[in-house]
Length: 359
Image (cartoon, rainbow, N blue to C red; front, side, top):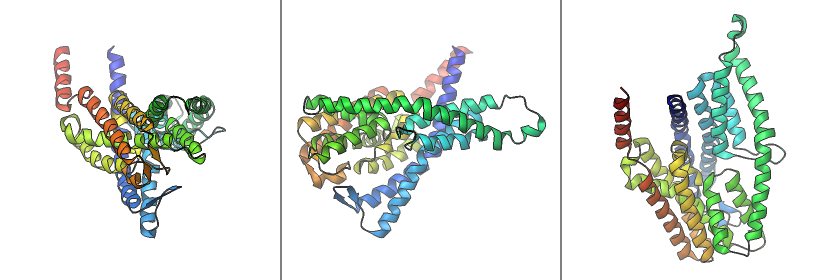
């Protein structure tokens, strides 16, 4: 039992380390994107930025977001295995966050977390190898990174990504069978899919499905999706504002950035919170987003552009219900977090009591 607890604590420490190194990239990317997109205008292709300076600022923000997931993966592995784990995990984190393989699968932050942990333990094992002194010096900079990246990269592309690609195709078929049927059920599923991996394959499947329907002049599913994309970051931001004892000072600062990301429909603003406390955060934002999506579908809210958040309100049919659905979804997520997340001080005190009890 003690061994299991030690392993869980090791993983929790690794996730927290990954988040702490990732946070500056999230904040830089999120703030730059928020400022740049706020100056744009909604078009059929999404938010269009016409000012050259703001476009450059947007590109810097995109770069910050591109670095975010590899940093998470790299420093999860670093916490578990030290410096030799950083490069392979960053490479595989980048791979997880970009389409690869025959099915062009992208697994997002969940895939990057898995690869970070896999690299950490694989490198840890590599460091136990008995090798001649001449080879030992090149192990951390040559042999370990190459072997780790190759072995785990091949496993990811050929074993992990293939069933995920098949699963995404199945999801599209399921959504297609619901379209035109139960609006509430479709809205619930789209909303939940939007929040579950925040930019990963399930989220992107929902996006692809709604875009395909938009091409046929059907905008309600896109309305549900665009309501849902804003709920996770807005919920996490508001939770940090009103339940300050449940978050670290670092989390509370990130809440401000997440709030702006929520306003412009960047779901990824909630990722750091989910990584640190996945068992409480993920259910809360999934339920809130599902309810928001269902309310949007029930009230025939239509988003006419492929972007989300309150920033696109001028190009939404059913503006009042767009805002109300988003507000209710955020309220539900915040309420769930309020009742499920412990106060940090209390959690610390409980840990101290547990330590005293074992003495």
